[in-house]
Image 1 (cartoon, one colour):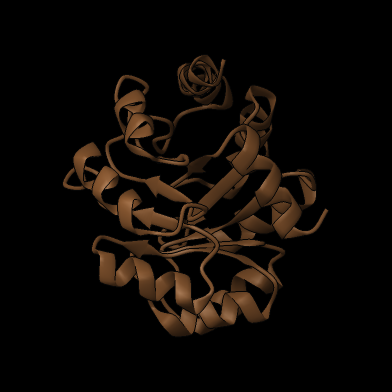
Image 2: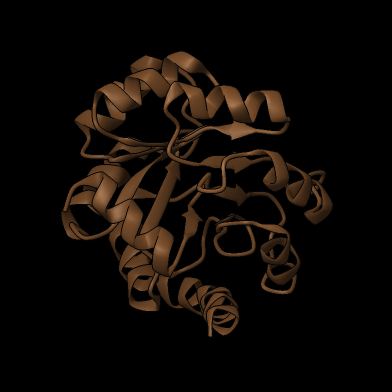
Length: 211
């Protein structure tokens, strides 16, 4: 499958991005396999993790049906490095038109971080495939509802920051399309079994609402 195919499938079924900040390369494959076994196929290794490109390469090779890539991507050069490592997903805390353009040029999925309507519209115009609403701690469900009212109906909105299974329903009711899951899902030092236990309530919360 192409990156776009993988993203489209995940967006329709389980649009939860696993943010594995601090992941060690030695743990990458086992953690990734645990997430995929739970039904999650969007996996992000932030570039401020130890040897992130090594982890991305290992995950991409071991999990060909998952959409694996990097977070905290700040420059076009970093986009190229992620692509060279086999990554297919580019996530940023901010909107940088050059980063989006390079990701699109290389056929990668790009989710820039935005907070305001101006940033959101600019990111979509630049070719972003979805919007990381960050930090969600200050982008409340009410703010998501306001953004949803003015943005294109098919724009994918993914709140990131402090999301828990208990907070997902309010955001979804406001128009969120999915979520990025950080420290509530993964923290450095957790083994694969622990990550699976943390992932299960998020997956169940998403499926419960879908049903």
